[in-house]
Length: 135
Image (cartoon, rainbow, N blue to C red):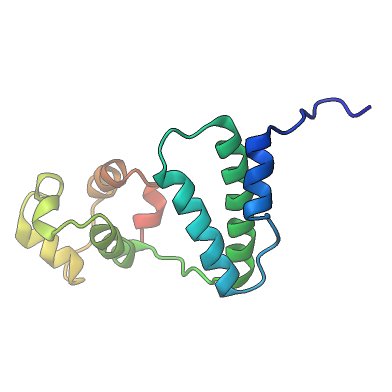
């Protein structure tokens, strides 16, 4: 007898037979898996069976992306620019941290370096490790 494993519910069986989790080997399978994840998340009222199944699918997506997708490592100003874009923010949105829009623009254009305090404040604002903002 195997201990620690519970018998899957009929609903979980339906989930894994409707879209069987398999290792992802190409972009079409990746998109199909992401679509399955999104459809489950969009339905609301996520059950424990949904969470378990989503965890399996997310692991498959993660494994595929780790092997096939090169994610550039951004640091310094390139990272700051990407964070602004990703967060749908404008340079003026950083005025409260960097004191003026002119300073923000000078930093983004490489005319001025970030101070240690600015790095710390931006790291808190974007919830990232401050070492990533050091060029």
